[in-house]
Length: 491
Image 1 (cartoon, rainbow, N blue to C red):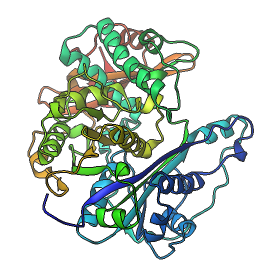
Image 2 (tube, rainbow, N blue to C red):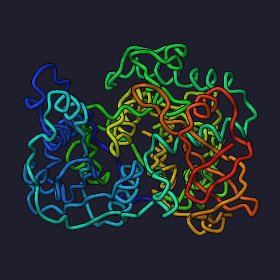
Image 3 (cartoon, helix red, strand yellow):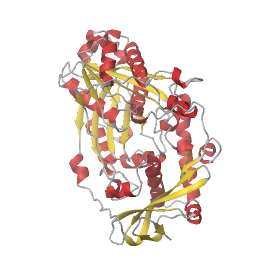
Image 4 (cartoon, rainbow, N blue to C red):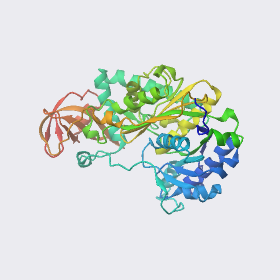
């Protein structure tokens, strides 16, 4: 690498959690967890004075009422004049913030950047059980100095009319489309996927920061039970992201010049080598297929290329894992395969799924492991929306051969095939993907993505009990049906 002092380096990482036993009102709010994590990250770097030198504080948007949480953090750090920034919603946000922060440091715009985020879904769930619908958290008013990334509506009007929009509806549809594309039977498919998820659980059992540290077997994961209720076919609870966690994390990035000047030990330095950002067609309705995500392959492979690596050169990987379909599709797109270890945390089911902030935990864990293996290279993938927004990063404790490199290959993604969506269609269709939603008493509604004879995509539903039962026992992808123009399908 050419001699330069503006090399970005990750020097401090921290993860915090709280497990409320009794009174849900007794716990810390998300902002308090963020501040705790920031201070712990400075301690991790062995240089608390890093916080005194911070010129930007960046927060990942969460499910809380704060408007400018970075200002509260900056004041707690003793740098009230630091720039404040906020990301939009999306699980890609953390890696995108790291990518932008590395570019800002490399360009000399900032010397020390602090990134943090937290959620208290566990406290909120416990409060709801005792009838408290809203916990009292500070307002954190104001407007951040900078918003990094754009808020984008990712729901097509056709999806809104069909009441399609929750991840627990969309990702299982991807899963069923994937099963059909692979030519698997329902039984073989759920067995394979549960084995994949069991391997994630095994990693979580070795991760000191994981929320669920007891390894679950594949049989436990795929078998419905009192503690593993069916959610949306084919997923029981243990194949869903676990959002009921109180977790926070923080990252501190700076230039190598600052790290050396402030005395951060070299064994703490982890270098971002390369990063990319891109998104698939924003509306699921317009995707060419529902079992692929081409932007993942294009941007993921481009990130490795910028780092001078092939997919087989990365020793550590953390693939975004909100649901099994996200992992399988990403692994296929990038060329990772499913036989190797695909997580360093244990994933959002077992390590914990603090919504948009999960990837901060995966980067922090990746940094810990890379410090133990300085010559190893790590790949982190991030996903927001419905396999929509993607960000990637390559890291190592070994300095890169070139300065940090970043790309956004969006024009290449935008040129890919797409479909038109139709609203109010009546006529014959072929089922492309589907899922069945469960309530306390069993199946309640089936959601269907279907293709018309013209290749347009239409959304539909059914509530016929016999059909719902059959949809969980037989393959419905590829079946012929008829839409009535009001959004109902019959077979």
